[in-house]
Length: 115
Ligand SMILES: [Zn+2]
Image (tube, rainbow, N blue to C red; front, side, top):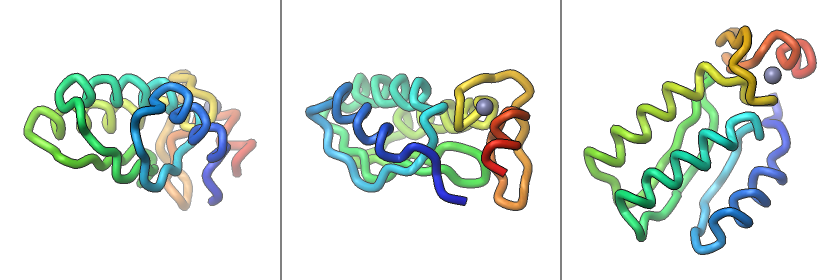
Protein backbone atom coordinates (compact mmCIF):
# COMPACT_ATOMS: atom_id res chain seq x y z
CA UNK A 1 0.00 0.00 0.00
CA UNK A 2 1.27 3.45 -0.87
CA UNK A 3 1.66 5.60 2.28
CA UNK A 4 -0.77 8.51 2.50
CA UNK A 5 0.00 12.17 2.06
CA UNK A 6 3.75 11.89 2.21
CA UNK A 7 4.41 15.34 0.86
CA UNK A 8 2.35 17.06 3.53
CA UNK A 9 4.17 15.31 6.36
CA UNK A 10 7.54 16.42 4.96
CA UNK A 11 6.22 19.96 4.62
CA UNK A 12 4.89 20.01 8.19
CA UNK A 13 8.17 18.73 9.59
CA UNK A 14 10.13 21.38 7.68
CA UNK A 15 7.79 24.08 8.95
CA UNK A 16 7.69 22.96 12.60
CA UNK A 17 11.34 21.90 12.91
CA UNK A 18 13.28 23.83 10.26
CA UNK A 19 16.56 23.28 12.10
CA UNK A 20 16.30 19.49 11.89
CA UNK A 21 17.45 17.42 8.97
CA UNK A 22 15.54 14.30 8.02
CA UNK A 23 16.29 11.08 6.34
CA UNK A 24 13.48 9.12 4.76
CA UNK A 25 10.01 10.00 6.13
CA UNK A 26 7.04 7.81 5.30
CA UNK A 27 3.86 7.74 7.38
CA UNK A 28 0.30 9.07 7.29
CA UNK A 29 -0.70 12.56 8.44
CA UNK A 30 -2.94 11.09 11.17
CA UNK A 31 0.21 10.42 13.14
CA UNK A 32 1.62 13.91 12.78
CA UNK A 33 0.54 15.04 16.30
CA UNK A 34 2.28 11.98 17.82
CA UNK A 35 5.34 12.57 15.69
CA UNK A 36 5.53 16.22 16.69
CA UNK A 37 5.33 15.39 20.42
CA UNK A 38 7.90 12.66 20.03
CA UNK A 39 10.34 14.98 18.23
CA UNK A 40 9.87 17.61 20.95
CA UNK A 41 10.51 14.95 23.61
CA UNK A 42 13.71 13.64 22.02
CA UNK A 43 14.98 17.19 21.34
CA UNK A 44 14.59 17.89 25.05
CA UNK A 45 16.72 14.85 25.80
CA UNK A 46 19.34 15.36 23.05
CA UNK A 47 19.27 18.85 21.53
CA UNK A 48 21.50 17.94 18.57
CA UNK A 49 19.67 14.70 17.74
CA UNK A 50 19.39 13.68 14.07
CA UNK A 51 16.34 11.92 12.69
CA UNK A 52 17.49 9.12 10.48
CA UNK A 53 14.26 7.46 9.45
CA UNK A 54 10.52 7.71 10.15
CA UNK A 55 8.20 5.04 8.82
CA UNK A 56 5.28 2.75 9.54
CA UNK A 57 5.70 -0.97 10.14
CA UNK A 58 3.04 -3.50 11.18
CA UNK A 59 0.65 -0.64 12.01
CA UNK A 60 3.02 1.23 14.32
CA UNK A 61 5.32 4.19 13.94
CA UNK A 62 9.03 3.42 13.65
CA UNK A 63 11.34 6.26 14.53
CA UNK A 64 15.12 6.09 14.23
CA UNK A 65 17.49 8.74 15.55
CA UNK A 66 21.15 9.24 16.28
CA UNK A 67 22.66 9.48 18.82
CA UNK A 68 20.40 7.38 21.01
CA UNK A 69 20.33 6.51 24.71
CA UNK A 70 18.18 4.60 27.20
CA UNK A 71 15.95 7.62 27.76
CA UNK A 72 15.62 8.35 24.06
CA UNK A 73 14.75 4.77 23.18
CA UNK A 74 12.23 4.60 26.08
CA UNK A 75 10.51 7.77 24.81
CA UNK A 76 10.43 6.39 21.28
CA UNK A 77 8.95 3.06 22.50
CA UNK A 78 6.13 4.92 24.30
CA UNK A 79 5.16 6.85 21.19
CA UNK A 80 5.54 3.86 18.89
CA UNK A 81 3.10 1.92 21.10
CA UNK A 82 0.69 4.87 21.17
CA UNK A 83 0.71 5.10 17.37
CA UNK A 84 -0.94 1.67 17.13
CA UNK A 85 -4.06 3.14 18.79
CA UNK A 86 -4.34 6.16 16.44
CA UNK A 87 -5.61 6.06 12.86
CA UNK A 88 -2.59 6.69 10.64
CA UNK A 89 -4.77 8.41 8.06
CA UNK A 90 -7.10 10.74 10.04
CA UNK A 91 -5.74 10.70 13.61
CA UNK A 92 -8.87 9.48 15.40
CA UNK A 93 -8.66 6.94 18.23
CA UNK A 94 -12.25 5.79 17.64
CA UNK A 95 -12.52 2.16 16.63
CA UNK A 96 -8.89 1.87 15.51
CA UNK A 97 -7.77 -1.67 14.80
CA UNK A 98 -4.56 -3.24 13.56
CA UNK A 99 -5.45 -5.57 10.73
CA UNK A 100 -5.31 -6.18 7.01
CA UNK A 101 -2.91 -8.05 4.76
CA UNK A 102 -0.53 -5.19 5.34
CA UNK A 103 -1.19 -4.55 9.04
CA UNK A 104 -2.17 -0.88 9.34
CA UNK A 105 -3.62 1.23 12.19
CA UNK A 106 -6.88 2.54 10.67
CA UNK A 107 -10.31 3.54 11.91
CA UNK A 108 -13.21 1.77 10.17
CA UNK A 109 -13.79 4.61 7.66
CA UNK A 110 -10.14 4.97 6.66
CA UNK A 111 -9.81 1.20 6.39
CA UNK A 112 -12.53 1.29 3.72
CA UNK A 113 -11.08 4.43 2.03
CA UNK A 114 -7.59 2.95 1.94
CA UNK A 115 -8.68 -0.61 1.22
ZN1 LIG B 1 -9.20 7.23 10.15
